[in-house]
Amino acid sequence: MINTKDILETITMIQDEHLDIRTTTMGISLLDCCHSDIDVVCRKIYDKITKYAENLVKTGEQIEKEYGIPIINKRISVTPVAMILAACDNRDAVKIAVTLEKAAVACGVNFLGGFSALVQKGFANGDKELIDAIPEALAVTEHVCSSVNIGSTKTGINMDAVKLMGETVVKSALATKDKNCIGPAKLVVFCNAPEDNPFMAGAFHGAGEPDCVINVGVSGPGVVRAALAKSKNLDLTGVADLIKRTAFKITRMGQLVGTEASKRLGVPFGIVDLSLAPTPAVGDSVAHILEEIGLDCCGAPGTTAALAMLNDAVKKGGVMASSHVGGLSGAFIPVSEDAGMIDAARNGCLKIEKLEAMTAVCSVGLDMIVIPGDTSAATISAIIADEAAIGMVNSKTTAVRVIPAIGKKVGEELSFGGLLGSGPVMEINNVSPAKFINRGGRIPAPMQSLKN
Image (cartoon, rainbow, N blue to C red; front, side, top):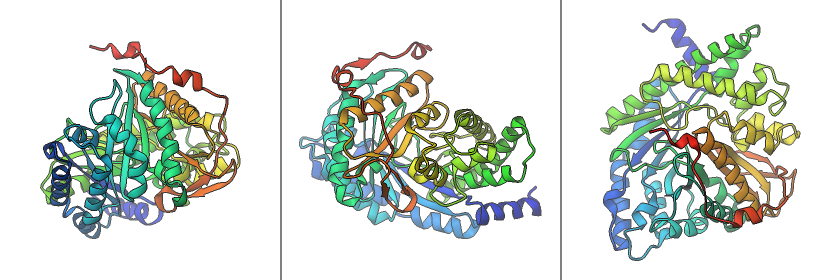
């Protein structure tokens, strides 16, 4: 039974503590859009997306108004485009990207993800053509996002793909240097990518998913921080329990919105991704949660331990609130999108090596990190390989989204605006890994892969 106290608490969370539904993402399968003629493919893709997602934004706005729950983004994810491209005689991936952009604009969504390829064990038809097209595709579109899965615990790491993605990140930054290098901000390189992730830029609609589905991504770092601020005298066991209870409340709201959107749109409800997704707004920061736990600044010794506890408590609280938890689910640490992370990077307390250590215990990985514009492709590839190794060995999703700021050096700023935020150019180790990267081949799967 909901009582007055619960209602007032929820109102406070929404009005004062930045509680929101970060995204409702409609996943749409494009497998039935395959055809040898790319013009036919593009027509079928546009028609299917605009038919299925015609009322996505309107339905989200109705739910917002009726329940008083902010839904910040309405998004679409589609089948990895490389799979569709494989059937085409003319594999013009940019043409499909432009079609996806037109569909996104027609539906009124914030982003559309799925300009993607899954190459963890090697390259199939369409994969290299899609990867080669990423820089141009992200330069000529505004709403399209791209991702490439280069490794997994089951398969190991495709180092040929790792090398290719380092080069692609650099090319994408150069292709959008007149737009604050926005291209790489819409590109994620994964290890163990999930098929049902509703968050951009890494969302795609996996081959094992239904024809159409609604996935929800919740948020609420500000709610967790505020709860901790009101409970100063707890030991760490008490802190973990408080975070669990708070994550339960946040996830229940996501479950409500997902169920309601599913019913109104007439498509299955998929999962709630219970990740704490920060924003550049003051008071909506994962870093500030860690500081509320007791750190003077995010990045100080103890940061990895505090983040591990936070991530675990969020998962434990969330799985009690929904029977269908999926996606990434945990705590995100995107530097340019988190006010506390931005401050910590600016004052030098938070460095990329510490961020890499933190990725071993949180959701995803090295996310929205601005690096010097003259960083070599081999160095970026090596960063991707290091992060993929953490994911592969620990059987978790890891990812890299770094932005070479063309023409900028360490300490200068790069700003994207909106949820993508801004951040300082961070120093990285420039000792060359080129010989290692140029070896190619595959890093074999670890012993953890032999679970059958």
